[in-house]
Amino acid sequence: SQSSEGVIAQLKNRFEQALIAAFGEDLAGADPMLVPTSNPKFGDYQSNAPLALAKRLGKAPRAIAEELIQQLDVSDVCLPPAIAGAGFINFTLKPEYLAARLSAFQIDDRLGVEAVKKPKRTIVDFSSPNIAKEMHVGHLRSTIIGDCIARILEFQGHEVLRLNHVGDWGTQFGMLITYLREVCPEALTTADALDLGDLVAFYKKAKQRFDEDPDFQEKSRHEVVRLQSGAEDTLRAWNLLCEQSRKEFQVIYNLLDICITERGESFYNSLLASVVEDLEKVGLLVEDQGAKCVFLEGFQNREGQPLPLIIQKSDGGYNYATTDLAAIRYRIQQDQAKRLIYVTDAGQANHFAQVFQVARRAGWIPEDVDIEHVQFGLVQGEDGKKLKTRSGDTIRLRDLLDEAVDRARADLEARLQEEGRQETEEFIANAAQIVGISAVKYADLSQNRTSNYIFSYDKMLALQGNTAPYMLYAYVRVQGISRKGEIDFQNLGSDAKILLHEETELTLAKHLLQLEDALDQVGQDLFPNRLCQYLFELSQKFNQFYDRCPVLQAEDSIKTSRLMLCDLTARTLKLGLSLLGIRVLERM
Ligand code: ARG
Image (cartoon, rainbow, N blue to C red; front, side, top):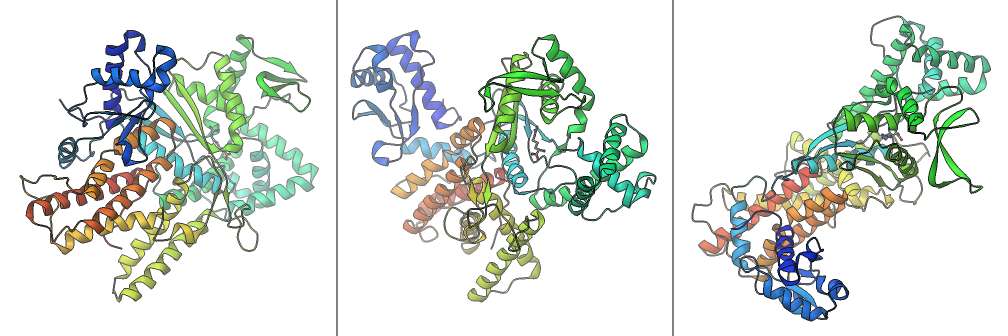
């Protein structure tokens, strides 16, 4: 029976069985070390397990390979496996197998990607900007990467909770509310929603007042106490600030098509005291100069002394880390999550390593729970420095995204003029919006997230290269074929068959079959650039096929088969891009 799991997963299964049959139960769980080959001369997949196992089995790799091949039953999927070099095993998929699998995709919206057998309740903590502060490019990266990860895990069948851990609590609110009392006292008494204008400017002015006036500082401290004790007018002011920020964040989320549930730092407020208590109970808490801390393993200060993580300050206040400790417990105990994912810049790597360590040592992370910090590098300007406007100010996200759309529009209008095409304003506005936003998202996702990347409108909007426009264009190209040939992809006839003769057809078909493996990879190690790379190669392989193989001009059965390949490519692109948070266009 042909199972419909990913090809790698399937071959790995068979391989494991062969390992056991050839060398005994001891080998159960040994890694088949199976990867797609980079060169077709080595077949489609290659294993170097015989080399890796040589020492353990006390045999020559080639001998191991031979014994393995004897036991390996892959005849339904592959041509007879071949031994190469020092003891590699090469696998080449059978055209009939490829054709049969791809034909089944014809009526499968999931394109062969099965839902996981053991769905995990997963929390993706992403975006998470701070109230009354600018949502900056770091938050943009977190938003784009986090959303993509959530989309992929959801598609795989996991139950995903998308959480926005907004910074909506802390001593800065004392300052903000004190300032609000000064400039807009009615905000503390009226129940009406007030428009506070630009919150970032408001924050700056409040900070300025705070820095220059000791009396203001004293009032601010008092206001923090009032907030913590739930004084009505202070809470009202706090709410007003949060509401205003929320509206601004939502503008960005709407532009980016982001779905996320707010559960800010304030949510964990009532749980902070018990974090301290329980750390005390398990004997981790140490008092150091009036502060309650946990001394960390593997972290040292400049003098080489063990580094403390402060859980409660000497004035009784709590920290960012305390809130994250409370959140871990809540997410594991109340939300019942089995996988906790945090998407922030690499600058917070220590914070998460420390918090995870304390939670682990306290016994709060059960064996069956995974906790991962998904970190990413900086967004830089074309000069390699921090991204800024020409005048040197920090860039507002809104402006950054608008500019991408404006430039996409200018590119499109130039192209329309060149091609002598007339399009409606509605068409142009929609296409510019999709291309512009997609370009920003794709530029981010296609980088290895751990490296810094340079934000360049020219690069991300280019029609050539590993860009959103290139990918969208490949999709449009296929739709063009169906329009030109007046083809209904949904209706190619019941005897429609996939026939794979030409090299470019085979190469494309093999790639189409690798979507599930690509998604499996991203689901495990959370590097979205692997999916981008998969889609980029798919577009390239499609273009090579389309250059080599006439479609509409081919004779009937071949024409149908090629149309099926075109349609599968388009559907794979559409699905893959949707998992990156990118919508396709039918024309552009
Ligand atoms: N608000 C934080 C920031 O802007 C990010 C929060 C990330 N999530 C978390 N659970 N700590 O840097």
